[in-house]
Length: 247
Ligand SMILES: NC(=O)c1ccc[n+]([C@@H]2O[C@H](COP(=O)([O-])OP(=O)(O)OC[C@H]3O[C@@H](n4cnc5c(N)ncnc54)[C@H](OP(=O)(O)O)[C@@H]3O)[C@@H](O)[C@H]2O)c1
Image (tube, rainbow, N blue to C red; front, side):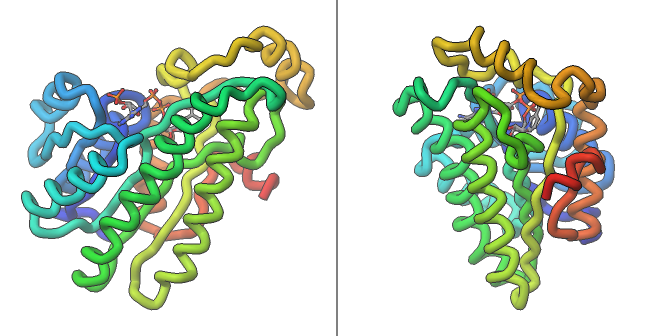
């Protein structure tokens, strides 16, 4: 899709990958609806963009997600692209996963994106097409000790995305996944850490290849991959080719 003058929803736009993506898309002529909980950060971002809409939203709350899509549609009268990027990490060994904490990760990293998809699909259908990009993680292709809660939900997001892609192909609604690798954002700092954090670190370091991983990417590098996938509409976009081999 050519993104010039298109209406693009970017969740998790107050920081990190979403922030860089909002700036890149706006620079390339898109109208960006920027979504997160931190209104002040969104307003600051909006002050540097030509055509944007701030929508304060809790992506872990389905009602808030539905209201967000309504607001964007009410303001612009169309929605061309949805980028489900908001998310949070969760580190804990399987044995000790706290179900309440895990439920929050499910609500934020899976139900939020799914609800947003369900709200934009009828709009895109009416318009004759659209693009949905869900931000997954390279971890969804791995079995890294301590990461099962986070990785399993990203893996579910992969399956929902690629299945929706099949279901919606005839309606010109393209659904894609981008798999970032470790990216230099506050993601690690914001990760929910279970009580067995130290044992996870130890286990993780013993994982094959842990110490030979390449350095983190910049958020701008990932944003560029997200832009590429919106333009190409390809099913899956890995930020690193070596992750592609784990498909
Ligand atoms: N960084 C990495 O190494 C990495 C690697 C692979 C995949 N990813 C994925 O990339 C995506 C972006 O991560 P990031 O690295 O940019 O993380 P980040 O710097 O921690 O930013 C997370 C963004 O999500 C938003 N967010 C969190 N909880 C939210 C909620 N309940 N409602 C609405 N927005 C919420 C935050 O905004 P507010 O706090 O203002 O709400 C923020 O804008 C995530 O889906 C993550 O799983 C990251």
